[in-house]
Length: 442
Image (cartoon, rainbow, N blue to C red; front, side, top):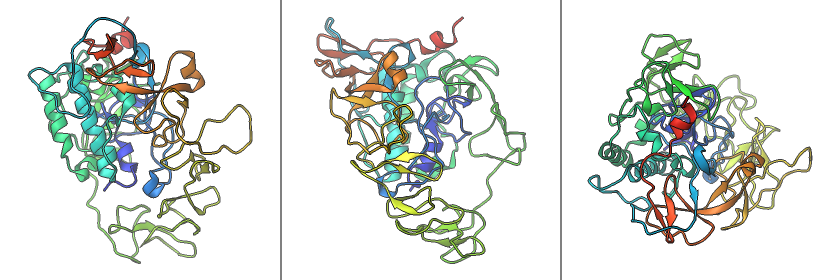
C-alpha cells in the first residue's frame, strides 16, 4: 500500500511551475520527479507533510510536477482555453460517448474518450486503490479538463488504441511498481527534441517538459541516465533512478528492520510493514517503532502519526479535526481537515482561527483555494468550477461534471473538456482544445 497518498502524490499528472511537467501524474505520467509545477492544467498538492491516517494524507498545496503516466489530482476546473470545460448551453443534437469508467471501444472511440479513460484508470489506481480508497467517477477532475490535448497535441505519438491499452495496463498495475517511479512499457515517447516548446511531457522524446511557471510554455529537457549529472530543474533523472549527490543512480536495495532495531534514516521504507524509522524522545538514535498516536509527542525526526493523527506545531500528535472544529496546523504550517470537510482560505489579514467546513452541495459557492488537495470544498462527485476573475479570487460554484452522452439540462452541469452541451446532452466537440497552440503559439 502507498503510504497515505504521499508516494502517490510524488508522481502526479499536473504540470507545474519551476519543474518538469513529467511526473505530474499522468503527463508526467508515471515517473517520480523533482518538485515544482507543471505547465498547463491545475496542479495537485505536493507531499512532505504529515498524513492524516485513514482520513487521508496532509499535503502542501500548490502545483506538483508530474510524469507521463501518473495523473495529478486536486485543483479546480476552470473554463476557457486554460483547460476548463464549456458550461451547459443550448444547441442542436449530439451523439453519445463513453461515460464514467467504462472502457471505450478502440475502433470507434474518440481522442476524448481515450484520454478520459486513461486518466481515470491512472488516477483511480494510483491515488485511490493503492491507498485503499474506493474508485471515483472523476478522480482527477482538473486534469480531465485538459483532454484530449494532454495526449494528442503536436509531438505526441499516442493513438486512441494505444492510450486505451495503456489505461488497461494501469488498471491492474502493481502498486509497488507505481511507487518505484519506473516508466511503464506502454508509455509512448513524443517526437519533440530538446529545447523545443512543449506543454505536456508526452510531447517530448525525453518525456520531460519544463516550464518556469505554471500556465506558461515549457521546453523539452534532457532525461539524464545513470551516472550523469542531475539536480537542476533541467536535469531530470530517468524513471527508476534517483538524484544522489548530484548524480543519477539506481536506488540501493533496502534492508527492512524489525521492531526496536536500529535503522539508517527516518521513514517507513527501512522498517517492516507497520513500523517507521524514527528517533523517539529520549532515544539516542533512530529505531523501528510504531508511529505515535494522537495525544503522544511526535518523534524527533519523523513527523507522522498513526491513528488518523498528524504532528502539530507543538510537536504533539493530534487527531485530524472535522467540520465545525478549528483547522489543524501541521509543523510546516499546512492547514488541514478530515476527509469530510475542508479548511477555507484566509480572509485578508484576519487572525481568527479558521473552522473546518462541510463540503458544499450542487450550485453552492465553493473554494478553489485549498490547502489540502484531498479535502474538497464540494460534496463528493462534484467539482468546484470558476470562470475569469472568480478564479483569481479563489471562489467558484459546485457543479456536476458530465461526460459526452450525459444530460446537461441544468446550469450546474459542466460538460467535460472540449465537449459541449447540445439539446440537453453533452457532445464530444471533436479535435483538440488548442491548449498547446494557445500557450506556446507565436
